[in-house]
Image 1 (cartoon, rainbow, N blue to C red):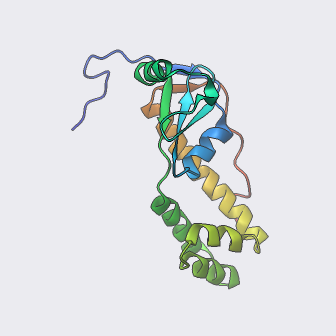
Image 2: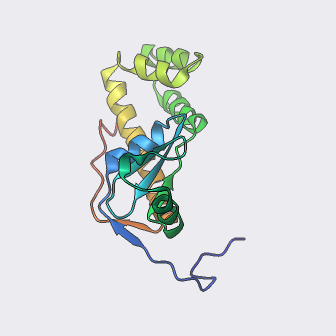
Length: 168
């Protein structure tokens, strides 16, 4: 069983930062194939590094190495597509038997289930509102766990969940 840093006698200092919630959320759910995303704990911005490094952020290679080693940049690990698919499958399973449930289940059986689900969901406003609220709640739970695991304390609150809490 792994012991926490405090139990091992290590000193961990929380990083307090005003977070770009939208940027972090996008990095969690829409990973780029050739890029990595990091939270800059000094600015709260999300830094995207393409194929190793991008000088768009004004860091030299030495600055990048130092930022990673010091914890200034904290990796944002995207939610795996399989997990996101599982969220959608559970959502569809909870719907009442009706056209939206059938259409969304069919979309999830397609070769590109996430995109097909999102496209199909647009035809059902009530279910779309419910899905957005469910999705936001799941992402916020993942984000809170990620913040805790990386000793990041947000100085600002995340935006409220979208949609309705119940499709009724």
